[in-house]
Image: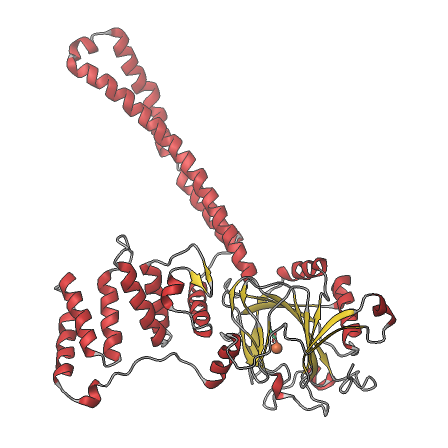
Length: 499
Ligand SMILES: O=C(O)CCC(=O)C(=O)O
Ligand SMILES: [Fe+2]
C-alpha cells in the first residue's frame, strides 16, 4: 500500500501524471481520426446539398460524377480502414503496463487515508466542517471535499464502528449536497443514513424529520415508510427512559486521550522545544569536538532528555533518505507468537541501514559515539522511517516490556539503554514527538537529534520515557532511530554522567 509513507504518495502523483500523458496522446490520435471522418462528411454534405437542387444535372456532369465516384472508390476504403484501426487496444495495453510498472493505489489506501483524516481530526480536535472546507489546523488549503467524499468518509467510519465521526461526516455531506448538483451520491442515501444515526441516538424527532424529507423527494422509498412508522411508535411510547438522548461519543481511552492532549500542546506546563533547561556547547572532553562542539539543549533531567542541534548535515540526511527509498517496508510489530503484523497504530514505512552500507551511515554511528559517550558495540543498525498520511506511532516504550518476547539481540546485548532519534526532515504541521508522562513536546527540526535514556541509573526500565509520534497533519516526516543497548557500556559508566 502507499498511504503508509508519503514518499510513496509522490509515486502515485507520477503514476497519474503518466496516465494523463497517455490519455493526451490517445486524444490526439482519436481526434485526428474524427477530423478526417468529419472532413469526408462535410464534403459529401456540401455536394449533396448542391445535387439535391437538381440531381439530374449533377449526375450528368462528367466532372462532378468523376469526383463523386473517385471519392467512393479511393477515399471511402481509406476511411473504412481508418475507422477499423484499433487505437483502443494499444491504449489499453499502455494503461495496463503502466499499472504493472508504476505504483497504483488500492482500495486499502483509500480506507487508510480516510481513517488518517479521522485520526488527525480526533487528535487535534478539528471540526468536520473546517476539514471538509480545506482547513487543516490553522492553515487554509485551496481544496473543498465534495458531498460524495464526505459521504464516503462517513460510511467508512460507520463500518469501523466510529459512529461519532460517521454521523458528523454524514451531516457534512447533507450540507454539501445542497450546493452540489451533479453529485454522484444521492440526497436520499444521505437522508436514510442520517435518520438511522438519529434513531440510534434516541433522537426520534429528528429521525422523523429526516424520514419526512426523504419521503418528500422519494415517496416510494422502500424503507422510509416502514421506518417512519417505527419512529412514530417510539415517539408515542411516552417512555422517558426510552426517549433519553444517547449522543455518540468518539471512541477513545485514557492513554489516547492523554497522548492527544500532549500532541495538541494542551497539557499544563508542557515543556516546549525552546523552553530551555540549559543550553551549551558540549565537547565531551573529546579532542575532535573542541573545534566543532555539539550545540546541546537539556530538555529534561529525569529521565535525561537532550536535543543536539544541527548534528547531521543536509547532505547526509539526503544520502540516508535516498539509500532507504527503495527498501521502505510497512512498519509492523511482532506479536506474542512471533508473527509480524501490520497495525493501524503505527503508520509508517521503514528500513534498516548498516554501517557497512555507506560511509555516511558509518560516520553517523561514530558521531553518535562522540555525542553520547556511549559505545556503539551493541547498537542496532540505523532504522530509517518515513511516516505516511496521518503517520503516527501510538504511546510506547522503546524497551521491551516484561510480557514481550525477547529477540536474540536483546538477550545478547541487554535492553535498549538509550535512544537517539534523528529528525531527517522538518514537518509542515504536526508530527511532534511527545512524552505524555513528563509533558514534553518536541517539534521535528531537520538535522537535530533527540537523545534519552530508557533505563534509569539502576538499569531499570524508566516508564517516564513513554513517548508518542503525534500524527503528521501536513508534510513528510522522516526520522532515524539508533538504539544503543546495555552491553559495552560497563566501563563507561554512562548512567550518572552529568556534564
Ligand atoms: O518519530 C517519532 O517522533 C518517534 C518515533 C519512535 O518513537 C520510534 O520509532 O520508536
Ligand atoms: Fe520510540
